[in-house]
Image (cartoon, rainbow, N blue to C red; front, side, top):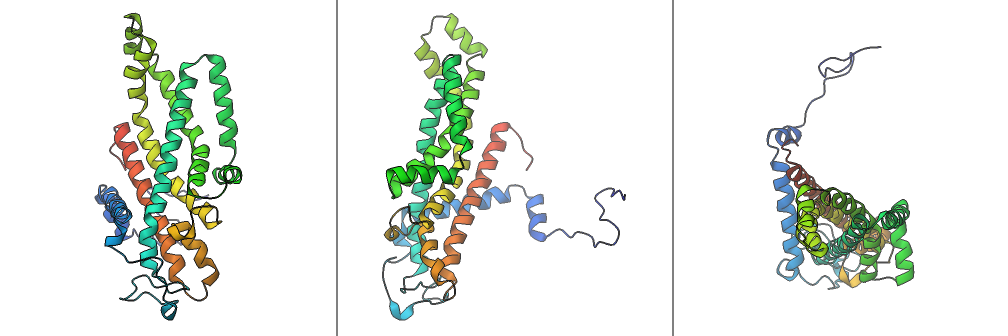
Length: 294
């Protein structure tokens, strides 16, 4: 058995060369979060003002169908001659709205759920957490499919479906935080001074439970975007006219041999947006924990 010391490669293998991009990120740890924030803000800007950056995503031009990226069509065209850039830009609003809406709904339900478990008695705690365990045992996409099957297809149904699958995660974190905070000295002092239970919860417990939720919510936005795109790809999400990124992938999958751009660029939009959100979520977690290493 050969022992490798000080990171040296085993005999017979070439030395590992660090890529310039990796070296730059290691020397400037702020660069990754800065690039992620810039990209995410750019996506938000496109989602807020799509008409200022792109034309009509539904404009059909059969003569220019299956065009490769060119100055007239920056990201090419699809099978109907619709501009892929316009469809991706206008689809940003639907995808981000789905991600943020589902996460916000999951956070509201999960916070109320976790507070009830953390502040209730042992019986309430056990009952609510066992329900959470059952929900978390089902994969996110499968749970979302079950909810959509009950509520029907469409954007609101997908948002509710994703929220149902994410809410138990919020509930468990809030429950733990609540149990820690309610035994803190300042909470015990407020109770001893005669402050009503509602006042203790509103002034002391909830404000100290919510900050960690920001980190969890940020990470869950990316997961919600992926789940929403997956359901839209299956035809269960918003209508095709919304140009949601998952719907664009679904439209392009039957024409991959004719044109690559209509499938590649919506996929890149999803991947880069989720990566940027994940990087920002990790940075928030490090800040919250008071850590500086990357």
